Length: 337
Image (cartoon, rainbow, N blue to C red; front, side, top):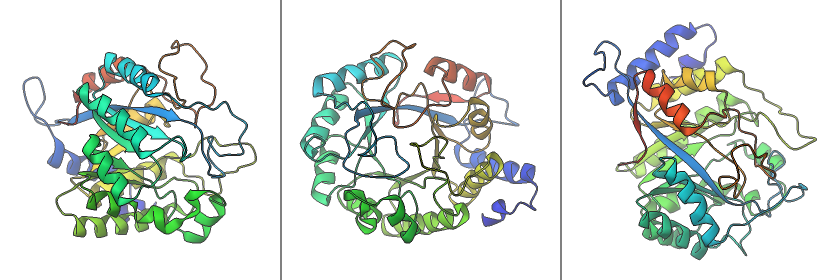
């Protein structure tokens, strides 16, 4: 897999190898699908931001505590209304995202939202601050099917530099989060690194080793990987390790070859053309029509959303994304089952 990262290796060959592995493990053949180049099932999902209040001082994040942005925390009723907007657009897999403010983002709060989503035939995932084993168990019981938890960077000295204050400053507590969730019964574990914070090759290798360790401990779980990339950040933060498009594609290809059956996830942080290109190579799950501010889906589609965590680069609607993928031969899925 690491050969994919070598710039001396032909990028077309790297992409072809990764696509072949993806077809082998995910291809869907059927009426109207050419058997020579079958596509695969593409799961579409949307993030639902519940709260932008946060105690952490992550220097690269729009929600960082000192950042003078408009903050909002959704009540249960408001969260349900947001979810119903997404359900109306077709989504049955929704990712709950929130900043970290323990007074507001409690286990009980998340459990109530999860229960409301499950009652509406939604398969909910969580991308929240690391929890205790007991909290994860309560969230699994409430309906959480997936944990998404990014280590951001595995380089501990750099991690401390980027997370100077707040609960997120604890490197080990975050690193061990997947194990606590798995011990609590979480069936799917999502890992990721935030590209731009450290040497991308070093971080990718560290994440792959982390995943292999987890797979050995929990061989009955499903694993997913994502490579979010910093494109914009609060004033004063300069991306120290920028990753260009070609290196970005190579990293996803390396993940596909290293973990043939894993879900590879791509968000709307990236431009439409690049997302379409990666979809044809190795991606099996994509977000669509995303808003990264709490309450943004109820606003008019033309509204400018204040207080976003990061800007969205792919502004296509879910219907437009789905239609484009279908034209390219993909089978669209809105639900994890």
